[in-house]
Length: 559
Image 1 (cartoon, rainbow, N blue to C red):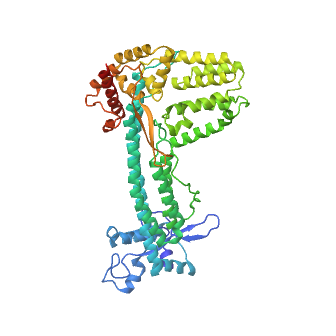
Image 2: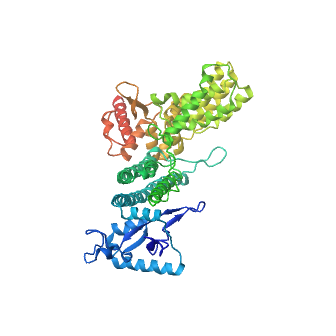
Image 3: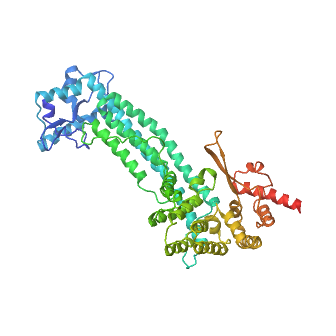
């Protein structure tokens, strides 16, 4: 043993630079980083066994080769790749290097005993061999998981890019300007967006599903590593936590509509690779990188961006609650501004019973109550600001509630000012523009009803007919906007199970006849049916179109 270490400095594998001992630069202590390997196996059935070799020749220095821990196991696990001739060449090169650099290791008796036990004692050797096999397998499985995840991420990235391309195309082909001539951002309709959203969500779900299958293999190998060498347990736990984080990151994409990918996914991949590399290093004896302490587990599923936005909106409404319960609180400009910023989110929520408490009406009402005690100059400024709020539904609803609060306070001039601004906005809205329908899809029917009340139904009907005659492509958005929201509840009546839209009746100002004719042209496969019969159409627009046809048939029979 002393002769072997006295004529070698580093691992015998030519491309490996690991020294046979690691030195601590601060203390000068050294740690064994190598094993004695047999060119021909010690026992029959072992790697490269030579039945013609004597016991003395088998134990001699010529049949022994010093290798680092990793490569000492690698040559035995893959014996066909490392024939005796190759290993003898390695030994010759190791001896030649020693003659050239004159560097080696002089072992004391304790170090000889340690190297002998770890190289030749059956129990430590079998444990080390088992852990070597499982560590390599775990590293391979983790690498495969990261590689497959990258491939799947590219599919999600492509789906997100396609969605963004739709948005860019919509903005290029549908120029819309405000009253000051500034160009406004236009979002595609829900009907246009849904296939792209489904594609992105499908790509993310498929990625998670495939990674979950691969994770089973990684975790199984990690448990085998822990069983073979309990001291590696903390590193195995570290890798397992990173596997779980990678799966969670694979199902996430920032923003709806999508924004550019953030660092959550690449960070998860990097952390898995880092933990896997640390496990391999710890197995080789290099335990300088310790596993981080696990964070406390969060109960329940990971909160999505949408869930977070809804939660924060609910918390905002709760913070404004006291202004609605009492009437003496001072005007809070900062809180009012936050509520105004939240109006677009509230506008996007479907007006169904389960969301009433955080919908557009409640959000606008909370804002108006916060403004209750603003002085007259400030209140007039808030009315002017409200008239510039987008979309139209948010502006009009806010103005109506500001007027109601002013009426409660006996400030009739402010009430009239808010009502005048709301009426002006309603009469000025251009319903020939696709954005008017897209931005106000949940409240278009309500807005048009208010407009009919401010003028008369005939003008609204003429406006809609002119819009359809000039742009028949508005038909799907107009149909969907006429849908009245509802939802079904669980047996106990507390949890909403499904939201839906239906059209059971239509107002007088709606051009039923023209719309029915266009439906027959645009959707020839759709036939008249009631709410239940129209369920055979999976597309929302076609389902509502079927209900409109039924109403149109009933009207014609009355005529």
